[in-house]
Structure formats: structure tokens, C-alpha cells
Image (cartoon, rainbow, N blue to C red):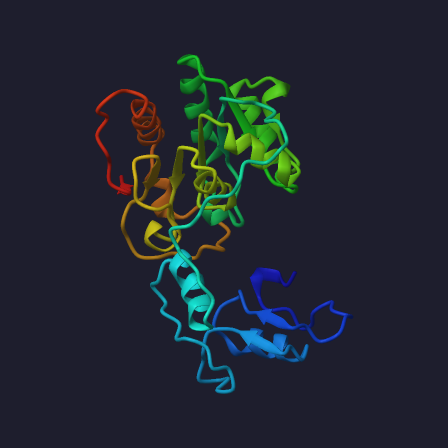
Length: 268
């Protein structure tokens, strides 16, 4: 709830001291101390010199997030496999089975590919006979509406304002593909084994990207890291073209043909 994803000053916790508190913010003393004030019987967190009382495993800055958090659990004797990513398909029906899902939003503008480019992709996919739908979070209705207008999408294919999780999960699980920036819906596609094209910048896929394999295409132009919470689209993300995204979508479609070659995880 704190601005800029900073550690809040207090937690809205009125219950008894919890059995277990898990620090998912990072390895900094502010989040350690915030959770420690709740009096948990056990605190799971990465170690930091500023809080020597926390006896967790060390923090490695360049580690992939999947391995990082599974390693935290293993450090406390809890089995965790970073390759075990699947979620069960939800019971809810998909509102658009077989559609290509475009999700233009992200947690910060730095990770938002321009709407104009998403519209080019949407128009090209529709010209090929694909159904294209657009989704967005609770505060992204305007962004979704702009994309839908530019791409000429009917109202039935616009899901702005934040779908309930079960419905969103069903949409992704039954989608033909998901195209998005580095944000939550890309991870949901991986969890449902739905083919995906994820556009990376300013943070590389080596830290947040999908697992290697032909079903998930991570587009990325190597360069210095930027600010993932920045207020402008990152230059690395802007180097990705609509043609590159369409080529990645074509590569996913080719998986339906016999003897389709595998592709590397990262590409221009």
C-alpha cells in the first residue's frame, strides 16, 4: 500500500502474533523489522547485515525470482521446486475460449509497451482470422479502451476494469496465446501452460522471464537495466517492434505443425 512499493510504516494486523511471517519484499531491514513487530513465532526472510537476528539464506541480486523464493523456502527446510509452476484450471468457463489475449498494462509505465503498437498487432492478428481480446487491471480501463478503439475491437472482446481472478484465470487457461509486458498475466500464462509472448524492459528475462521452452517467447534487447517502476516506457522495451511480436506469435502457431523447431528463450 505504500507509494513506490516502499515498505509501509505499519501493517493492518489486529490478530494474535502469527505462527509464520514471510518477508516477500526483499532482503532489507525495514521489512524485517515491520514483520518482527508482529511477534511471529517464525520469520522467514533473507539475511541482511542490518538485521543479524534474521538467520535466513543469503540474497543474490541477479538471481531469477523463481529460484530465489524457492531457495528461501529450502533454506528453512521446506521442499520447493522452481520447475513446478502449474496451477489447476479454474472451474469457471472462459469468456473467450481460443482468443489471443493482449494485456497492455503493467505495474508501472516503464513496463508498458505503447498502445499504438499493441493495436498494430491486434489488427494483424484479426486480419489472419484470430479473435483478439484485451484485458486490463482495475485502474487500467482507459488504457484498455484506447487499445480497443484503435484496433476496432467490439465490446464483447474488451475486458477492462479488472476481471475477477477466477474468470481471468479461465480466460488465460483457454487462450490461444497471451501477449503482454513483464507483468502478472505473463506468469499466469506460464502457470496454465498457455503459449505466451512477453515483452521485456527494463528488467531482463533472466530475472523475471518464463522457463526455457518453445511455448513461451521472451522478447528482449540486451542493455543496461532501467527502473522497473519508472514513469516512462523504458528504451529497451521501445526497441521491440510489432513485427517482432507478430513473428513470435507465428512461431507459437508453428508449434501446432509437426517437427516444429524449438527456439531460444530470449530474442530480439
